[in-house]
Length: 504
Image 1 (cartoon, rainbow, N blue to C red):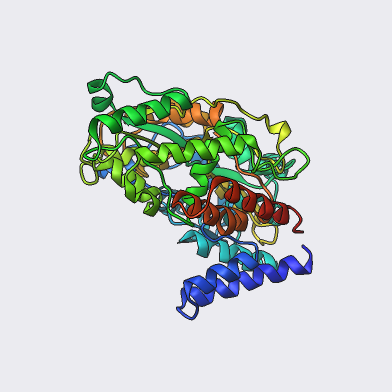
Image 2 (spheres, helix red, strand yellow):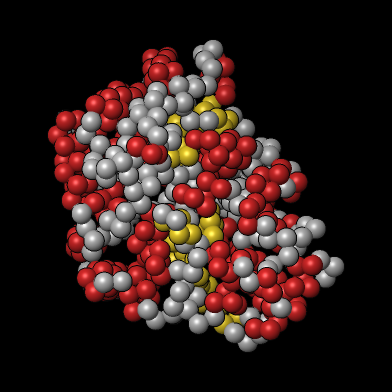
């Protein structure tokens, strides 16, 4: 790590600490974060779900590979090999999400009890996770053994982690039945990798799917749209028949918020565009990007007027309250629509794939690992710190935490969260909840299809977190609120994308 990057990380860390303690205002914090190359909202993906959904107990979800069962090879491994590290303390920092809270509690009852390895797991808002990781890696202190890496950070922190492939070669520490190849390949490649280096183990995968009102579509004799032209026509049809009681669709178009940039990429990629070209120069202002933004603004005619004040939570809430007929957003919001505590449309929502792109620019014609696809992904990984002191013990824990059994249980108890392994989607415990209920998993078949066949990944360059928020979301905010036309918006985005690519 060169000294300039070290100073940027430390500068961001100091600003984050000052902001958390009330010694710095939000506007100043955002300014300092941008100068340091961090867009603090970039990567702040929504995290929905209810821990212990349906009032399940941890013991209710055990299966044939659960380490808590004394008959399993997993139990014997943790009692023998894991016990060799008894008394060690692993320090973990991650975002506070329902699956993380479930896994931490499972660790207390299962992993710690069997191995004697202590776990100190901080679960924080994502900007504070970023500050912790930045400080730890800048100082190379090894304060944390495992940290959470959002997919938008992989290029920045790749050199600070241990490539899991070096640890998989340690056969004496191989967790029984771990099967790394069971982890969905697109997640390893696009969520957990920087160029040829694997940064960590995929941990979660918020990803775009479409959600629609079955009753409304049946009433208007509409089929779920499968293309972008059909998507526009369905929004128009509902709008003309039902607005303002119900609008056709909605977005997460809060001006200046990362959510708006996420929506933009779906339309950009869906019209054959990309942020960068293979030569690593911006393509964000070409004719395909222009067509995408014009489509986006036209679609906005069929959205509620308040859409430019909504992030992903506002968008999902509008659908759950019956204000719109369909929308495209993070699939982990789907279970909310079956929850009587949150939704007025229980049992009426259906999941469906994102629209088929009009054109799709191949990843080979894009730069910085950008991979176009209509299903924008926002995944993360758990990574072992290269600076940590307990690499082998951390590896034993990480295998347990990302094993097929634990990730299935985190999905169930975490309110229908999107899991990372193919076996999770086939697990009888997960499939048993594919019905209308709190914590439903009936959206996961569509989610799996999105991961395998439709996933879109943003560019992986060190300054992407700042570029996507401090430039793109701000410029797009001016566009969707009528302050700026498409041509000016894209020209400004291209200018800033060119500057970002030149940063060390």
